[in-house]
Length: 373
Image (tube, rainbow, N blue to C red; front, side):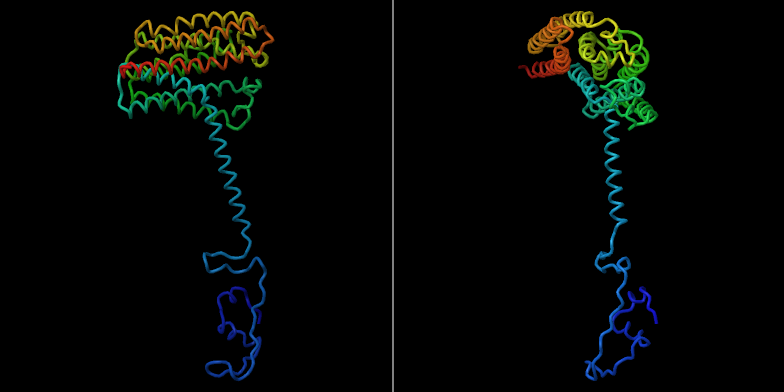
């Protein structure tokens, strides 16, 4: 009689032997121990490896679990892909640009005379950050064609095909709408309206129109980047005064030399993409003269908070030193010549530090005056 593997698993010990009388005659037995003769124990036939039964302890057997290992590998790949896509979506929001814009809004919010409870203040800042991220995402959606032509931006998620354009568009619009709605509920309608206008100005006026049509794109489009302090002030007070307009002017005058310093070293990139940045259209010398002009105007503009009385000596000294250093670096760019790429890079890097330290000094000065120091 040919035994099946399922019978072998279910039948054990003597029960198995009793079912095998046709295989071998039973030996005489007495009650109790085996005394009447020798009996050769029967062995179950060896099963193929892929049919070994599982251990009764936790279902752990010696059979191969290739399917399980494959599932584990697939899960690992999916998790890695998910993390990669999350990083790509974060990159679409231009986190470094977003961080600087949110910081200027936060400082304006903190030095403004109005107050919000901590919960609403936190929601307002998150809404401003989300709005800035949405603007960056929609900017990359519109600029995907020229980003693919520039070495500095060719590795961005959309040109590389890691994020579909429709995904960036959909998420950007949802993020923008959600940010405006949350800011309206957490703060007020004026701040929400300013945030909506900023996103529109940056995406439609600057990215879709000015950037590809005029060398003054950065000058006019810089208004979008200068509005976050006004939004922060409006979120805290529900209004707009002279103080936030001064902060707007500081960021507005800072924007052209900051971006033109970058464009000087990326002139070939912009020319290849057909973007009429000032260094492409007017050349190195004309761009340096404009950088010197805006850097010079930055000095008195940075001191206006002291003149208007909403900043003290600590901010004043810091603003003077930083603005003087900014102008010196711009002057060195002028005397360095077109071949001195390091001068333009130094000015670009310092300009980022300059704006952060200037607004940080305003915040620290405000805190020290409140504390009576």
